[in-house]
Length: 101
Image 1: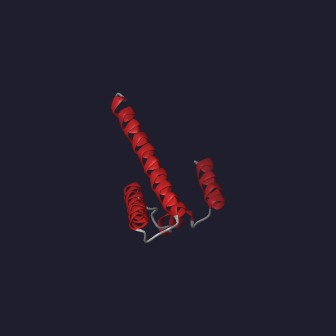
Image 2 (image 1 turned 135 degrees about the vertical axis):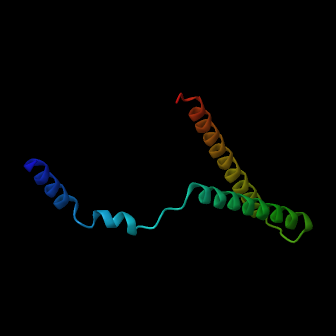
Image 3 (image 1 turned 180 degrees about the vertical axis):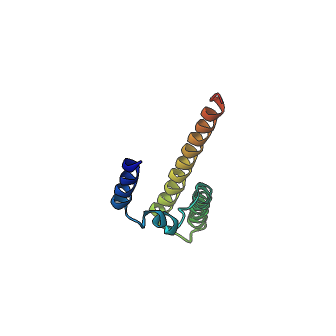
């Protein structure tokens, strides 16, 4: 009994009295769902910007094909990344579903 009390006091002195309250004060990090929604929105915005760049180039409003190609590549790369994240999420879900309870 004496060792447990000493151990608890020693442990509390190491981590400090504010350790328990510190975890409660920190703001919650953004949830995965919120992060995913923001990413989908960003991909959508980049695709809309790429579509606008192509329309402006086709209409003659924009003469710089380089900026149009950069906008198209940004949209393509972000979409490919989104698809890879989706594939990983599906693979993780399938792995969890195969686990035995």
